Length: 632
Image (cartoon, rainbow, N blue to C red):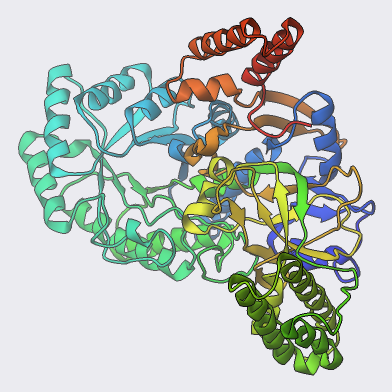
């Protein structure tokens, strides 16, 4: 039984808003992971999972994949479309496909194929390597294999030949030039292709992926180009091969109105192409089904103003109404909901290594011999009240800056500067305490006080594991996974393990909105304080880079059993130092030999003992084969 949000300190994190019924706080203060089973939902202690994995030798940071979540989400999307089609009396079916680019990891793709088989869930590829991945999977007979992206003759040749193996492959035409290649290869192989055509809609969405939509999008055919393709296919005797119409709005569409408008516009193209003689059977509405990362339930870059059920209903309704008005048969609806399929299934778990405190709790002694600005700063406390916080903040900042300027001019010494800095932090702490009173405090003051938050140094690389946070200001829910029954007494930002000033997280999802600092607990001595970043299954593994040569983290895929225990069903060890060095073209054997030679020269020159040589070589070898992250 969990404590309620109203009475629990954890309410500050807004878990009820963004958790999507996937998490709860247990009575012991740990976060509980909720998974659905035929017998009903069960809750598993996430901290216990982490400890169990670490006891197995799988050290944090860990990318934890929960297979149940992946299956539940595939089932949910398909069920939502099925329910909408039943309610609206839609006369055709739904076929989902997963875009491999969203998460290309082998075990993820294998599980998607396995869990998607009962729904004839297929795959979408946008490159030759992704096509190779797809052709190595045993898709169900009616599942689609959709080929998007720019294609050369080799890509097209392989896609055409795949039909001989029973793959339901559709080659989507992205340009007029691509049509020439498809016709050429089809005639060479004497294979009638299944073709699709990607169109550019006029409707443009909002959000981070706005450039994926509208008539200036990088991919797709304009209306004149569409007619060129239709006429050319007719002239070549291949018009009957055109089976699918495709468009793409973007990875995350925040506003359901954009979904409705775009679906309606696409349907108009679909009707007109059928009138031109194209026997279209599939309408592919691409990706767009979003994730509410913030729990705000509104049309913003990191949120959405609709549910999965509403998304599916809106699409089915738009297609049905347009087809019924045109007196045309209902096509099979296809979507490429990659983000919504995998984002929920993964989370990043990491520990806090140490803390830089930006607060001074000890009394700072100020004498009349101190610099005038230091004495003036001390006196601010005499009028520090909630109603005068802005004035106090202005004053202490001014006086602190005056001491800094005096130090630069040589008028005060290092000890004076240090005293001013400590006094400033002491007063900031008292101002922050004053904000807890039931009086109004301006947002500017709150923001300024939050900017003096602690730095919690975290054992992960932002650039490797959360690249979208750095690149496009993507928000992910981040919370401690333990002590959630205790009121957090500190505010912090997170700094990663890289030596880069950009390697930080300073925007957090809380119950009352987005904050520039995260409520955290003061670390206890020798505490293994751990946090989780949720909803990282989409794109983050694929886009990560080797900043500071921090490689892939350890990966563990688990399956929660109906009794709440879990099975470790797949494990991938994180990159060793030797592996990441090989990625950037180093010969690790040559590095070892060079180091060994230098060590031996030091022994010959009496700078090292033979015993020290052995210890140094052992340390070098152990590091070479060790984890790139901080090890306990």
